[in-house]
Image (cartoon, rainbow, N blue to C red; front, side, top):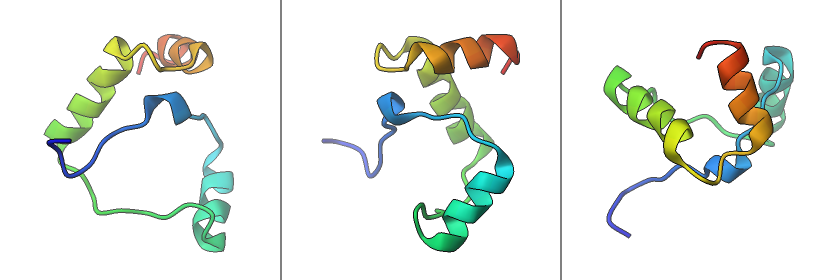
Length: 66
């Protein structure tokens, strides 16, 4: 392992904002520090190349031109 963090593309999900807010408030998920635009772009690009991204997520990305 040569990085301080990583992305688990296999675990990617689509959810409504209000559900995410609930999960944050309940402690089910936790927030982290804000990322730079460059880091966000790298993570987003990973969705295009990772073989672990679920098909549902790939369809969502295409359908919403993300």
